Length: 193
Image 1 (cartoon, one colour):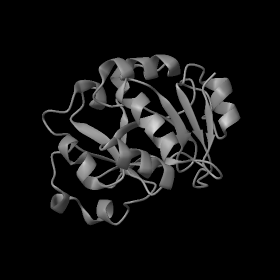
Image 2 (tube, helix red, strand yellow; image 1 turned 90 degrees about the vertical axis):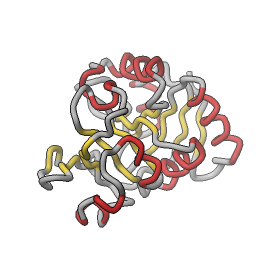
Image 3 (cartoon, one colour; image 1 turned 30 degrees about the vertical axis):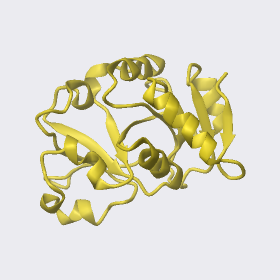
Image 4 (cartoon, helix red, strand yellow; image 1 turned 180 degrees about the vertical axis):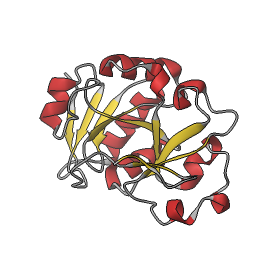
């Protein structure tokens, strides 16, 4: 069973160091996000990504969402510079919106699922943003659940639905009722409300 940390009362620099050490070694960390608990891993570690997707029962070809504390963390994955971002993207970050942006040429196929776009979010959730800051780059962000099942909204649900998680950091989500919307940055089309 994964160790548990309560963000509201006892999350310390030690707990963040523990999480970062696990992430750098291919581990999977569960943590609260804007609406639900998420599972995070190093997006450039294919073995970690495969392990995370195996835990979820999700196909590698679907692609992944990357979450970051600031745009410069995701800039190497995106073909546009920060100045080229449409105003609708800039005005929504940091915040609970995931945007599909043109992928940089060097982005590994497992992040995009082989598509020419990458799903990215600059989060305002304090715990998620701090994980990214301390990790020094973006993290995979996917809901803590088996594919096709409801996402975990509490630490207890993570324990029950995602055995095999290496560390569980628990605390408050940002209170959204649904996972973050996914929008196309080029057209503004809402792909997931």
